[in-house]
Image (cartoon, rainbow, N blue to C red; front, side):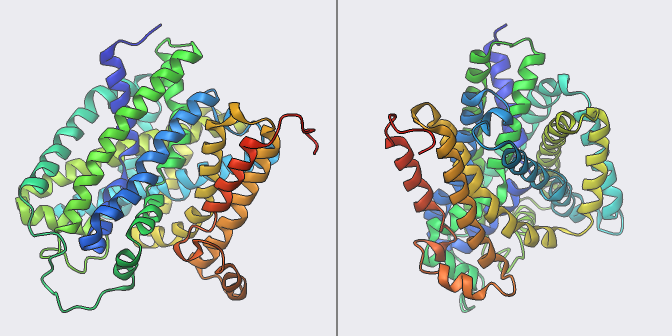
Length: 444
């Protein structure tokens, strides 16, 4: 069976909605404000890791065969499962899933109703009850999300984005407190805006999400009757391109919003607060309702996708029924969410710095696998290099006691000061793997 144009766009909208969640909404505004006049370079760096990498990941999943087993097929079984489980835990109940409800609550209804009117624990239970209900009806995901929820979400985002571009509240970099000293984060953006934006894009977790969403979308296609692997790959890539275009437009407007928020949200603690204050300044109370609708829909659709993908993977791994895992992950996520947004973000940063390069290495290797003469050796060495060097970056970010001397030694590595010690060695290793001659023994 083939999909018509209407269903292809619905699939693309569904993919866009899966990606557009908590991190996609709260991180661009704070990055834009911190970057100030350097917003363009910071935004370009962010787009590489928050749009380019997820799109490349979807393509890699499609090329590999539509499942994580194919993506990690050249790694030892134990290592492949460990990496996959770690990614699914991070993108699932440990960080990304709880964050969806926290952002929806703190940026949406909390500003409208007040924290005492609807406490966090009550909101998270209701939020994940709805997400679990939708995830239990996966065959209808493309109809629920691609044809109903996402068009509404696009309209709401369009209203906000057009207003920001054509009627900003201030000029870029202008603040109501020009005498204030630059913070450490602002200085980092001024000194290396592109690399700082590049690292900031990790926080969206979309490369991890793409590994899961690619598998989920292939499953949706199968339920729609598309069983040919070639057509599955084609539709997955088309859906990824549609989603990437949508994400790029959203990020551009949110970066611009942050860069022009200095007169209404200077000193805000996070992007959610910046967004809320900006919308209030621009639209007043009606704007708060629009914001609440945008954030809640975006976070809910992402929660549905993450819950479904995590439950599907662990169902196959542990031989537990899918519907039971949906309920378990929803309950765990509701519990974790009650630690609060700021704490969850702080804890997640070193973990993302450690795992992201591994995911990037897997994506690049799968994209060039057909050109590798010795794929097993290439995957093992390059993934190992990525993990070892990313751990040094993570130690620096986490400031783990007892690792000071190791971090100081590693500071001589290229790009270590930018949190990218892995980048040059990994891509150099990929080049070596690509030119390694075929006549060499596999055991060499």
